[in-house]
Length: 100
Image 1 (cartoon, rainbow, N blue to C red):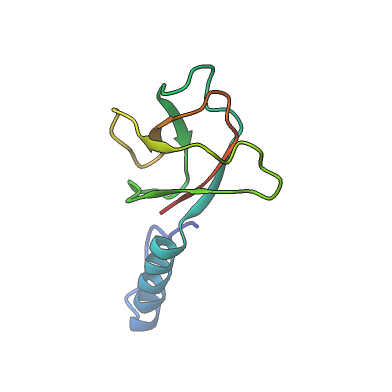
Image 2: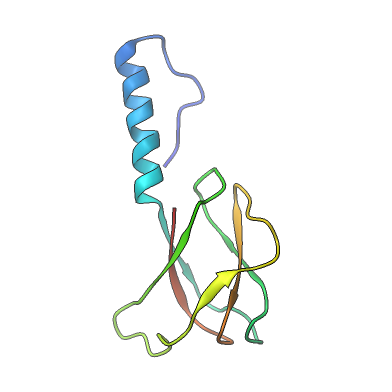
């Protein structure tokens, strides 16, 4: 979701901007990771488009997913406005994450 760089001085425009900003914080973004890397418990990065540092990441289970018995946790690198860093208990896993 893109936010305007400039907003007008009208109260309605400012309210709309705040509404969409708050909505993006609630909705977040779903990101598919096609491969967590060749070794378990090794940090990998995930690009996101939130435009801010995320507050949490949730693992989602996709229909037909066979590697659903895994866990993710934050990696040692700090998260940024464009990337999160995670460790996964399984090598070469395909993940669907909800980043908020």
